[in-house]
Amino acid sequence: LWFVGSAVEKSHGFCSAFVLFVVPAVGGTILSAIFLPAFVSVGASGGIFGLIGACLSDILMNWRLLFSDFVGIEGKKNHHIMVVVFLVLDIIVNCLVGLTPFVDNFTHLGGMLFGFLCGLSTMERVSPDFFGDEERCWSKTKHLFYRFFGIMLSLVGIAVTTIVLFNGDGRTTPCPACKAFSCIPFPWWEAENNKWWYCDDCSAVTANAVMDSETGFFDKVAINCPNGEISTFNVDGDTSLDKDSLEIKLPGYCRQFCDVGAF
Image (tube, rainbow, N blue to C red; front, side, top):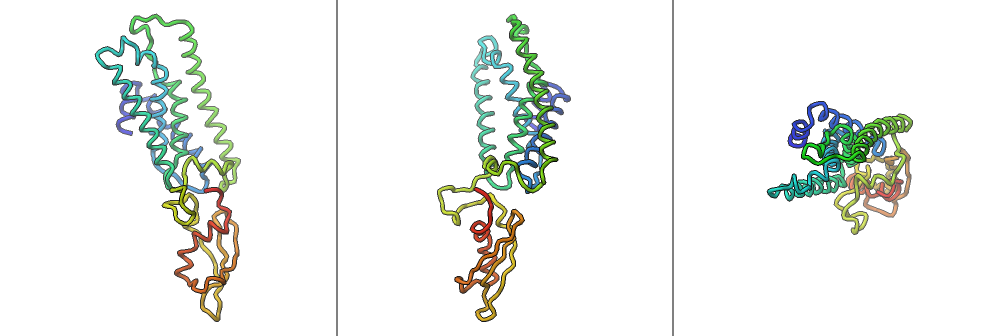
C-alpha cells in the first residue's frame, strides 16, 4: 500500500488515489460477500489490488509512449519492460497465494477489476503532443471512450453487485463452483483424507452422538453439516469410536456424509 499508493498519489494526485483505493475496496468486498457468504474478510487488500489494477490501466493507456524510442532512450525502455514484468509477476504470485485457505481471492480479483476500470477514467494519460508527436483524432476519441466506459462500467458494476448481494439469502452463493477462484484443496493428486489443506467448513462442524451402553462407544452420529442440514449415519462398525477419536474423525465424516460441494 505504501509503495504503490504513494507512487499513484505523487503521479496522479490525492483525489485519484483516494478513488482508486476506496471504490475497488468496496467493489471487491461486495464480490467477496456474494461468492463467499459464509466468510468474513478484513483488510485493505481489495484497495491495494485496486491500485495495482489502476497501474495496469495506466500502462495500457500509455503503452505506445512507454515503449517508444523517444521515451526509451538510455535504456529506459528496458526499465519499463522490467516494471511491467515485475508487476505481472506480483499479480500472479498474489493470486496463487489467494488459492490457499483464509486468503480471499475474490476481494483481490474484484478489487483489481474495479481498479482497472476506475483507472481508465481517473488516471491521467500523457498526450503525445508533449513529446512533439501530434495526436490523431481517432486516438483522442478512443481515449474519451475509455474514460466514459471505465467510470460507467464501474458504477454499473457496483450497482449490480449490490443488488445481487441484497437479493441473496446471506448463506448460499449463486455460483458454488466459483469457489475455485479463491481456494483449491492441495495437493489435488492426493487422496481426500491426505491433503495439506481443504476449502470447506468441515473442520468446525459439530455433532451429536449416541453411545452404545454395552460397549461404551458411539454407534450413531448426527452431524451438523456446514450447509445447515443434519446428516445421521451409523458407525457401529467402528468398535473404538470414543469422544476423542470422534472429534478427530469428524471432519472426514463431514466430507463423506455432508454435501460440501466440489471443494
